[in-house]
Image (cartoon, rainbow, N blue to C red):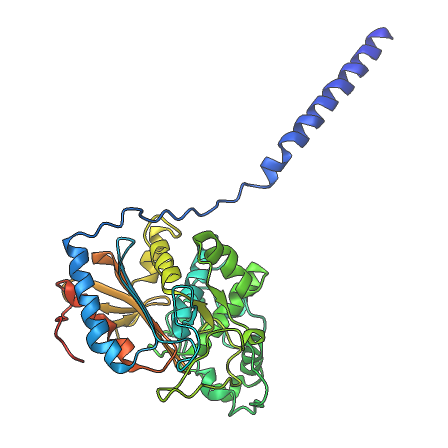
Length: 390
């Protein structure tokens, strides 16, 4: 009897010990430690001969192209993470008020698509999105089962552009249309829309990226704005970057026509993913740095994003997954995206072979902004001369 009591006591004692140990280690087994992104930017800002050549090329473009066109905005050119040229020109309200400076956040227009695309690719890295899966797997009711996530990313879905079809389908233009509204219209009017055959050809289309932003929200179970903030903006220290919503319409930098008249808000201004991200040149320099191998994305992801998907037509221009491409005969690439929405014009161009990024953001309509590729004339292999006018 005494042995039984001892056995029971020992059993209780060991059970208590194992329970304590189990509780002690349970959090580590069930809740893996989240990885934090540490973006280490260069601290040595000393310019070498190549940096100074890029600086001269940038200054030439700024003085002879941008300033002569009454540029209102900002330009930053960096090489190997070092700023080699930076200028801010004009006033926030164009004709009055405070000067534009390094903390002024501009509407990125279609450069926003680079963030939407990389959000999807980040989810693909985590295994929660499959690029070749049907969009209908992620967006309930989406009527075209043969359109994949990759088709949306590469603008090869065949879908029509919501900018042109929502009004024709009867949308009341006195009301803002949302991303979900666009999806609902596609579901309700599938027979009228008649999309082209998926993956047959490249057709740049804002609908693709409005839908991709919804996919991010469905998969991540949070808003698009919160996902970008937690995945990119906060970890990368992009303190002046955010996703716009209509409650901020009088707080953000306004846009203007070439004649200095303010662009009014309109019913398409609530849609995000294809546009509606605001940022500064210095924040965008951090975005460029994050896109280098080994920083925020795997090498495989970057290769998928930056390769061409549309070779049905000959030429230098192509499109990756959220990125426009100039593919030069020399083997060099310009990986970039331009943007236009209302009076906002933007350029974000990366020259990976020469470790250079060119960022030009403006809030008064100005076609000269799109000539920023002239700066690439500082290097060989791009087919651009420093004195080239186009």
